[in-house]
Length: 456
Image (tube, rainbow, N blue to C red; front, side, top):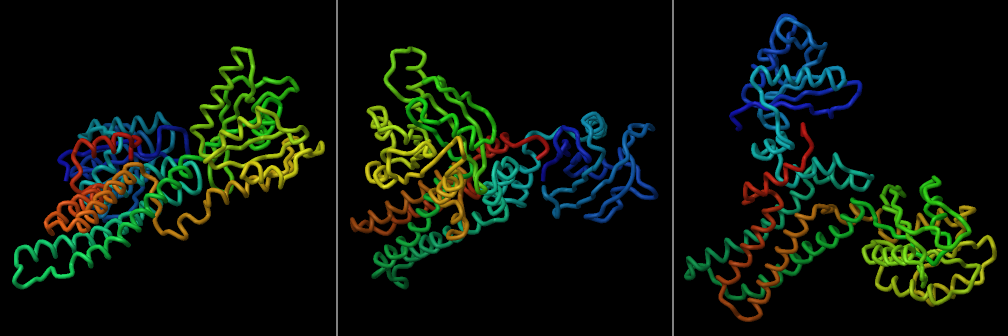
C-alpha cells in the first residue's frame, strides 16, 4: 500500500446537486476525523460501507453540511481505507473542503492516481483500469457497453484463458527437457501444431474485432464526396438536423471541410463535408478539392452524393476511383426531380449499394441510416463475440502474440528442437500479460494513468 494519503474532487469541478471529495490511504480516517464532525461518533469508529450525516469544519467554522461514506480497505475501489465526502455541488464549496482536507495531512492526488492504486493493490488489472477511463470518455452506446464489459473483466478472463493454454505447453516442454526418461515428446510436435490453430484463431478474431471496435468506439469517420452542387452540404444539414453548412445554387460554395458529430443506431459518425470535386482554375477551390481527396483517403466510410437528375461526367468517374477498396454508399440525390440514373445501373457500374435520395425532402434518410449500421455490423459486436477489444495498446500486444505463435509454427515445420518452441511461446505469454499489466514497466504504468482525469 502507498504510504501517503491522497485526496481530490472526484465529481468534476462544476456546478451540480452533489460534489464528491475522495480521500484514500492509511490515514484517510484520521484526516476525515480532523475535518468531519458527526453526532456522537467519529469516522474512525464507523463500520465499513456506511453513510453518516455531519458537517465539514475548518477549525471552528462550518464549511458545508455533508454526508460521509466510509469504506475500509481492502474492500474499496483503491483497496485502501477510503472516505468520500458528499457535499453541495458548487466549485467554491468543493475547493474549500479539498483545501481543508489537504491542510490536515492529505496531499492532492495526481491524475488517475486512485485507479493506479486500485491496480497496484490488485483490485483491478491494467485492462480494467484502462476501461474506467474509456467508460468515462464513451461517446456512444457501443463504446459504453464495450468499456463496461472490459471493466467487468471480459477481456481479462479471455486473456487469462489464452495464457493458461500457452503456460501448459511451456510447462510440458520444460518438464520433458528436464526428465526425458519419464516424459516423452514423441508426437508432441503434431499435437502442439493442432493446439496452435484454434489459439491463433481466437487471437486473430480479437484483433479483427479490435479494428472494428475502435472505429465504432471513436466514431465512424464519414466523408461526404460529390461534384459541386450534388447536395453534399444539404445531406450534412439533413443528418445533423441543423443548418450547419451553407447551401446555395452557386457551384463551389463549399471551399473547405466542415465536421460534425452525430449518432445513428447507438453508434457515432464523424461527418465531414467536403468541397465539390472538379477540375477548376480557382486557386482557393483547388485547395478545397485537394483536401476532399485527402479526407477520402482517411475515411472509414464514404458517402458519394450523385446529382441523379444529370448524367455522370468525368468528375464522377474520378470520385468513383476514390471509392475503390473502401466502404461506401452511393446516394442518388435529387430523386424528387426525376432521375436519369437507374439504381441497378449505378450499382452495377460502381459495385456499391445505391439509394434513391432527396436531401431536400428527406427521402431515403432512414434507409441510409439502416445501411450504415448494417455495413459496420454494429449490432453483432458483443453478441457473436463475447469480448470486444477497443484499446490500441491491447491490439498491439495481441498482434505481437500472434506473430510469436506463428514463429512456433514455423519452428515445428522446420524440425527445430523443442526448446526453440519455448522461446516464442514465452514471448506470446508475456505479450498477453502486458494487457493485464503483468511485467509492465513503471514508466508505461505512469504514462497510462497520467491520461486519466483528476479524481479518478
